[in-house]
Length: 365
Image (cartoon, rainbow, N blue to C red; front, side):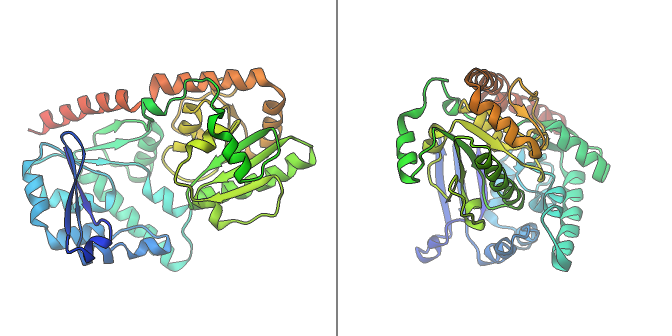
């Protein structure tokens, strides 16, 4: 398996190394290909806009090293829609599979605003439709995304549902995970007995959820709930609060101590696209979870079975239940962890996806 990346670490420019091959594991290598044009097309990222010009730069340059890998491959997986039209034009008869992580139009229309944002969203729609039309097959993370593609574009293609997952190593054994929690308590001067955890990157729907969490923390304090709210990840760099029961850490390099310290996973997400990876991570780590119905989209998670599924306006009530009911916390944690074990381990997902891709290769030959 070979992974081709448009771009890489900028310091490689100064090392005179514009192409760098990295061995990820046996029979899996990554080629990072630097070029000034590739980096120029990434400029919209700085303004929170999609990289709609990546495909154009690939079509313009037609890198020889990339074409050699296309000629060598049995099937080509493209992770973002921007490059699908370019890759299909270069691929000849090699099957091209679009590996979709989100319905990109849905994702960007929820966060874009103004004339420029609207123009980019329109461009996203055009490119995404073309990607669906030209790909041999489209891998989606949920049946919901398949339905959304059909509703928005009406494109008939070979949709493959392959859910997001976690590694077996990430799955908690269910025992006490408090070994490294003391560091978190000390570092952030937390004096409560319980911690509610929200993790997220600096992304519009996560910022909305973090602001909701501050409101929930205010209600929790008014009700005297003995719980501290941790907002972990770069999303915390875009919000501010003076609440004593809320800590925003900003970006952290290691989430494990925070999972270990947490007692409840919180997912007050109400917008966005794709499936919510943080929800799987909470469940895999053995945390009882409070989530919105939107936050569990794409997962077969039932209220009071694998988590508490409530409107964001009822989060404080749900948190209060968990704070006072240890048996409920243990039941939800065990059920959630078992759900991940049965349906969302990468080892199982990868095996099933490989079999489906083999069918695509056979049918395309």
